[in-house]
Amino acid sequence: MIKSFLIGIVVGILLLSGSVYYYFDSGMAPVATSDPPMPFEHMMARKALSAHIDEQKIPAPPIPADEPNLVAGAKVYKDHCAECHGLPNQPSPVISDIMFPHAPMLFKGHGVTDDPPQESYWKAQNGIRLSGMPGFKKALSDTQLWQVALLVANADKLPDSAKAVLVPEPAPAAPAAPVAMNKTKKKK
Image (tube, rainbow, N blue to C red; front, top):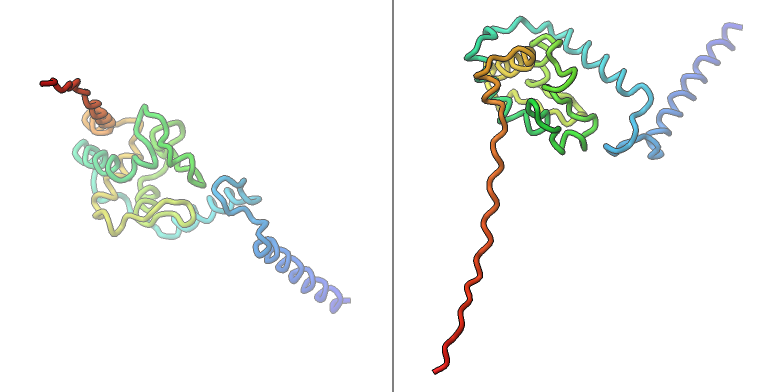
């Protein structure tokens, strides 16, 4: 009886493994950014990311969330993050809507103000695999990464000086159309 039970478990595991392999190998798994997510994809990715960040035991920010650091964080954010994550009171960047998963708008709605700065620091430093979010640990200093993390953690209570940095640059004016000159040749 136990032998039959164990054989049943082994066969069940093999069938499940073979089905999962076939699902991916046959091209049925969604891979385009416009495809719907796989079953449980969001939940599993969120749980894995949260568990991994929790395991890192990232210490508290080594810099204060004061005005100079928030202004510096706003400059870094505008230069490196706003292209995907947007600016306050502005429409979502086109690229954010064509990514999968969509890049979250950090100054709209839920944002990340309820996330501890350590979580945003880790995400900015390391990136998030298969999401389009790059890691910036080779492009930004540790201080800059903490400044951005503090900026987004405090996005709902920024000083005016930091808000002023996050105003979009005016679009460059279109070049003026050349004026056609009416040149007529005089006949001699």
